[in-house]
Structures are given as C-alpha cells and as structure tokens.
Image (cartoon, rainbow, N blue to C red):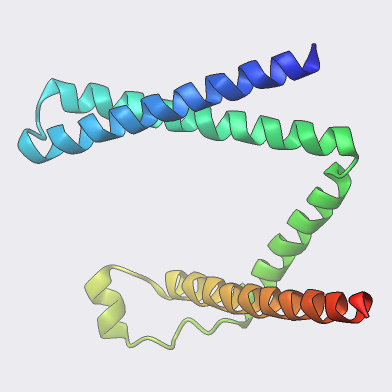
Amino acid sequence: MKEKTDKLLTLVMLLIGVLCAVFAFFFALNAETNPGSGLWDIVFFVLVAMIAISIIAALIFMFKGMAEKGKLLKFFIGLIAIVAIIFVLYLISKGSDIPASMLDRYGATETTSKWIGAFCYLVYILVIGAACAILYTEIAKSFKKK
C-alpha cells in the first residue's frame, strides 16, 4: 500500500511540476506582449500558488522520509547550527565595507550590507567545507581499497 501511495504522490508532484512549467511559459509569453492584461494576473497567481504547493509538498516528503529513518533530530540540529553560524557571521560582518554613495544608489542600508557580508562568508565556509569533505572522502576511499 505504501509503495502505491508514494508512486501516486510522486506522479501528482510531477504533474504539478509540469503545470508550473506550462504556466511559467504562458506567464513569460504574456508578460512580454501585454503585461497589463487580466490573463497576466491570473497566470501569475496560479504560478505562485503552484510553486507554493510544490514547495510545501516537497517539504512534507522530506520530513516524512526523515521521520521514517529517524534522522529528523539530526536535521533540526544541523538547521539550528546553520542559523547560529549565520547569526555569528552577521555579528562579524562590518557593513561599512561599501561606500555610502553606493549604498544610497541601490537603496541599501548598512544592515543590508551586513547581511550580504554574512551570507558571503557563509558561502565561503560552505564551499571550503564541501571541498574538504570531498578530499577527505577520496583520500579515505583510496586507503580502504589497499
């Protein structure tokens, strides 16, 4: 029974994804030719609703799969760790690296600049961490084969 339900839900998600792509295509076509028309509004809101449904369904599948395997606690610990790291990086970021004239030109503030700096630092950390994990995995594999 479970496999049939999972196959049915996967098929429904695939159908929603295809419908999102179709509505996105119509939205793109109509936005270029007649952005003020009523169809533009309808297609836009249907597209937003379908994307929201897809995201919610994907999150439900993810949490369902994690709960079955007992990995939900590890996920939340990791999520809390990432949020804590982002908060620490926000506190470390200066926000005054960019000249005030550039901030004014783009309508940004020092707080916005601090958030951008924090997420840049986060990307650097994640890329370096991923590279180290790849290197460790490859080196560990090479020693295990011998």
